[in-house]
Amino acid sequence: MSDSPIDRYENPLTSRYASAEMSALFSARSKFTTWRKLWLWLAEAEKELGLPIPEASLDALRAHLVPTEAELAAADGYERETKHDVMAHLHALGDVAPAARGVLHLGATSAFVGDNADLLLLRAALRLLDDQSPLVRGAAVWALTQLLDRDAFAALAAKARVVETDQDVLQEWSRE
Image 1 (tube, rainbow, N blue to C red):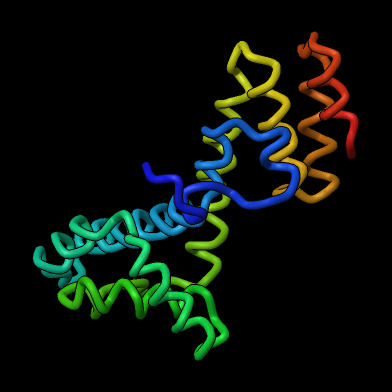
Image 2: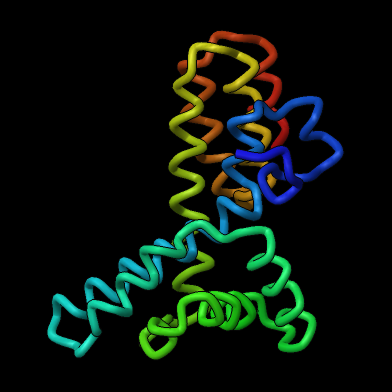
């Protein structure tokens, strides 16, 4: 992975508290790779259910799961025009995978990619909480404060405080 800003989460506190792994997890490239995987999985499931999804469409999606910097720049341009992040990324992906254009996001809402991607990224962040390093666990907790609403974070924090022993990590859990 490069040291490009699209490969790490940008925030003034990131350099102080986030591990490289956590920063990469919440980067633009990771987020939009997850969107693309969701669109592929949706198309595969729709084909399995009998919709006429051409194998060439699935192959095109598989070939473009990880967006390049140019593709992300194109999506930024589309977003300035459309004022819609999901539509912008659909257009950018359609540009590089034209065989998939007709099946991208078929039957889905914007929440399908946004919400499911967030859940997948949060699940991966939670796995980092199992790391033995307090620095990594603390960084993961901080990331959760950025992604979860107060009630969801408070519920998770209540459970985590029971098992966490490191004082610095406990302090992160007390941010609520």
